[in-house]
Image (cartoon, rainbow, N blue to C red; front, side):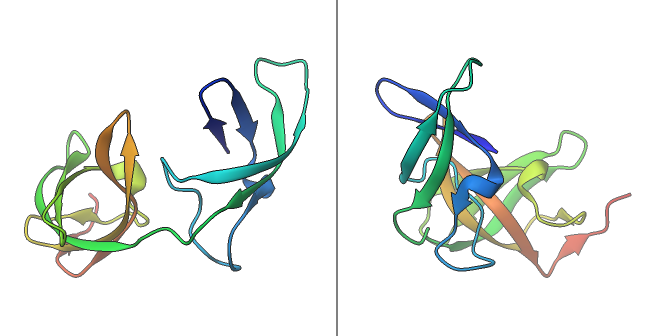
Length: 130
């Protein structure tokens, strides 16, 4: 689930309302531009979107783990584009923890105006979670 916002409105959507460009494609990415088709008033805080459609395939990026605090569950990845991205364990697609110098594949996104690695897959050089 998630929320779609514009300058005036915030609309709730469920995962089943989100239409990927192809089956098995990535889930919604923070900051991604989407189209909302049909809004249902629910009497709750936010109306519900009947359909949310992705406008374009989100970019995928690789990078190297710069640092990661396993206790705190956060760190940073330097993307192949040279930009630094915040990494949180909730965005990692496995139970493994990244290690410094390890490779990560992710969708670059923005959260509260800051660069963030979303839907992260670790490739090699990982540490099993204890």
